[in-house]
Length: 460
Image (cartoon, rainbow, N blue to C red; front, top):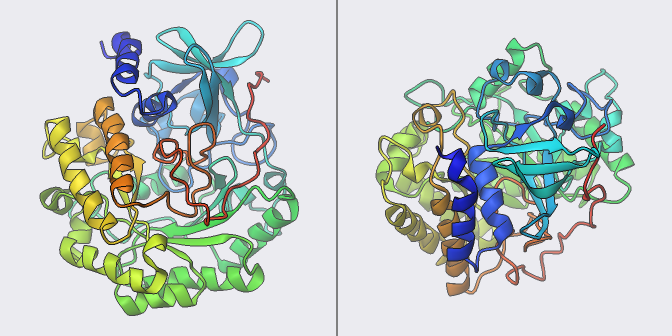
């Protein structure tokens, strides 16, 4: 029933929220509910760099609405990492969207009679689709035979190198794992499928992969790297969380000083640990708070509540601004889990009010959070209970509230995410950057060159 009314729903929201870019309405719907692929629109490669289209790397989470065994052809012949939408009846400006596969989605990517790829909704073509070209650096392997895609995949149309150097999380089991997160399952499913999926990536491998990227990325499309992985509650390789992730930053900055903006996603750590991140060369710190509401944080993030606690988490976020500066502390929240059954808000207005309270708290201190649009992965407790995710109206109203709060506090888009505004943004896992036209800080200096391969693509 939902698929039959999808076109009417998005057009209604475009009309009611005309000040929100129409591109963002469609992008949020694709991110929250996924997209299906005709076999002709898949990447043409299983793992490496042999095809013409950059394949989905599964860089940390699955971001799919089905498990690998349930994806059929999309599991054997990978979908693209991202797609770019242009044109169509809504006259879409260039919009980069992370691929989240859902075979049951009313959105389908397929070719027409002439082989031109398009996005179809309820059977009608609503935009042209461009596929990301295989980057030259993906065609080269490390000395041990591993692919660059396995060690240092790039996302956001090549802007960001995503270094998941620890592929599992030490928040483990029902009493500790975040209820929306499938990092541990994603590890297990790739290993079960026989795919290369390195648990702990050696520093030497990361440096070798970055050397290949630096050598072949002659246009300088890659502008930032993110160091991340699961939370470390004890040690990995004899190192605590700050030193484990920090060792990679230190090695990268020594080998490639200033080549990329260095970012780290980690827990909200004590001040001395955060100082070590900065000393190692990290310049942007992402201590993700996931959800604002106190009760939902305790229920949805039991490990974080147990080891740190919500109030201490927020205190540490603010403390870290004295080291990195408020602008360079950018905590993420997972937009949509506020409305997840059985514990979430039942009214969109209540969820928006709660999240806006959190935005105002952080922005009043000069901290600009960002968000990822929740993908209800089927192996997670919240995904199982909420296969449709949060209502699309919630996501559109969140974009409205986010921009309004930024303007209230005289703030601009955060650094390290590329350009802002419809037709320019490359951040692919939410539309917050697409909705910030006119609010991009001039001093960020992180706008990448216009990437190639963004026009309509033909099927192979």
